[in-house]
Length: 113
Length: 112
Image 1 (cartoon, chains in turn brown, purple):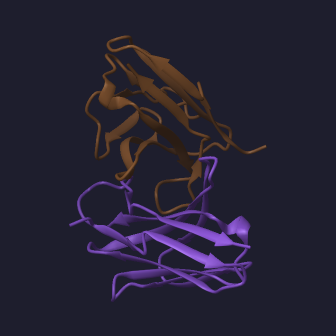
Image 2 (cartoon, rainbow over the protein chains, first blue to last red):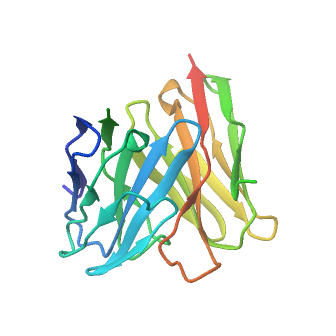
């Protein structure tokens, strides 16, 4: 089944403890992206990757890192999480960029205390 | 001012009604997406438009590039259509080929 998977789905952590949220797709898509969703603010783009080893900042990249070493995986790294990074995070992929249909993962609800 | 504005923010309809959700944007775009977010949180893509009109079942999406406006129509609405509908655009400006800008969504509730 064609899908985007994210792990974990739920995470509660403490300020400053490094964490990684994984994202994987099995559709051989070139484009992958991370978003956060907050009440009243909607979805905002964190980072995106047009292909392996190519990443770029979205609208809210501060406090996040990404890497794209393989085509199928695009992990989101929070080196030192803070409470303002408490949010619902979505990974998405598409064949070749944002002019193609977007496929979203199920979301990861992160709480930083 | 947000670059992508949706209206209305909230919409309540009776089952069977014809529904229209609007999206206006202030930048030149090369693509516009309509997304549906279910009450459980999952997001699915409904349409990707660069011009004209698309139809899928009871859903119709239109875009007017000159007027910088898109509409999502739902015919014969059903309670299972209850969801948040989100508009997102790819801007023509700048060198960013992977940047999507989102509206804040329209929450639709269809009553039986």
